[in-house]
Image 1 (spheres, rainbow, N blue to C red):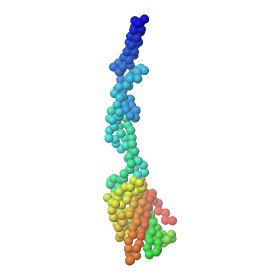
Image 2 (cartoon, rainbow, N blue to C red):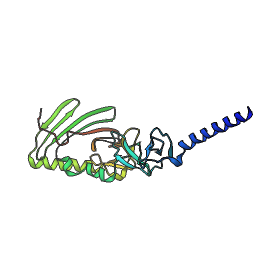
Image 3 (cartoon, rainbow, N blue to C red):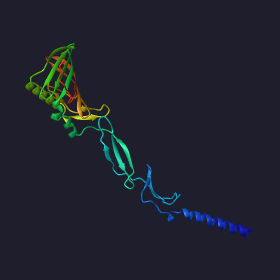
Image 4 (cartoon, rainbow, N blue to C red):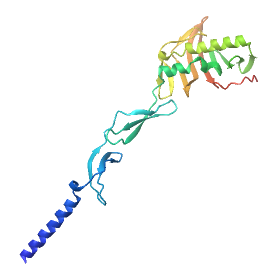
Length: 255
């Protein structure tokens, strides 16, 4: 009886060893192509119903490259690729501000050939408040101007071609004077650019660091500034909001 049990156990052991050998990697042929998931890669056995794998390892990511450039309106995308199996992963890239080249492109002369400039200003001093609004509509060779004070239109007209071109050039020059790239830093919380140095407001002959620029789709959309100064013994405060819009689409319709 004992001899029979010994023979039976030996037979079972041989069967187990045979099964193990049948599934062992040394008898497998593995695919050349990598199988992969988000964390690792491996080579699968090509045998029918074989579940053996080989060379399993975690992905080794490269330094990544920007595949979608970030803008002020939306995050970009950085794509990383595994150096072994070419699996990819992505991460969001936050916008950190325009490059100097992009900034300069926003102020190219061609950009300001056709646009609308509107400035709303409030001046306070000596117990008085004065509200004004100035609108300039420019096309390539023409302009239209409207001045409003205390909510009433005080003047509106279309200057001659020569005067229109001169006015546009002066307006653009004044914009460029207060928007030097080196004097601003991007503020991600507000998606605006804050002045980091004194900015001269040429029309008033005064300096201020309280200047904010807003861009939209790569174009200047708003200039805001606040300053205080003394004129003829009177303390004055000025708040101004300049909006720039309708780039390339202005149609003069002085109504």
